[in-house]
Amino acid sequence: MGLISLLFSNPGLFIILVPLLLYSVIMHEVAHGWVAYLFGDDTAMRSDRLSLNPMFHLDPVGTIMLFIVGFGWAKPVPIDYSRLKNFRLGLISVSLAGCLINILMATAALFLLRLSAIGSNPLASRLLSLVAQINIILGTLNLIPIPPLDGSKILMGFLPRSAQIAF
Image: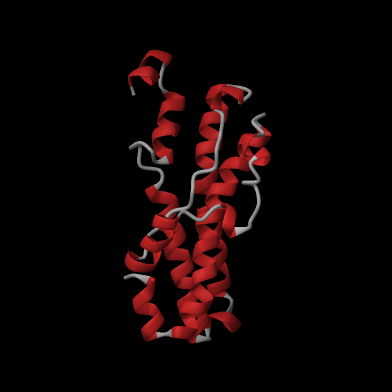
């Protein structure tokens, strides 16, 4: 289901949901850059990519896909993996960061959904359910070990050097 169909079926939900979904994708990318910074790579910071300003992160095709098919992406945050202290742990941590932030956002949405005052509101229930679903999908899909998804870099962090080169 693309967001365009939601615009026509429930415009109020559309107006509230779009920024939340865009920030789910943006937070995923910012988390990568932030953890890379903690491991010694300041490339994302020097590129102004640790900002939550959507203009720094939105990929035109990824944004259009979000509206048409309901799945999209942001521009990847630049990371110089050679600058990471403790390469293996840094690679795994940076790659996991985006997925974990999405799982945390889904958990927060589900927690808010369980609060009786919010959960009893049909619009809030639908909104929080969609935010949780999107973030769970985004976080778990990125764990698949197929390049360029984060799971491929996580797997690479566990492989011996010779297998990393082949992979």
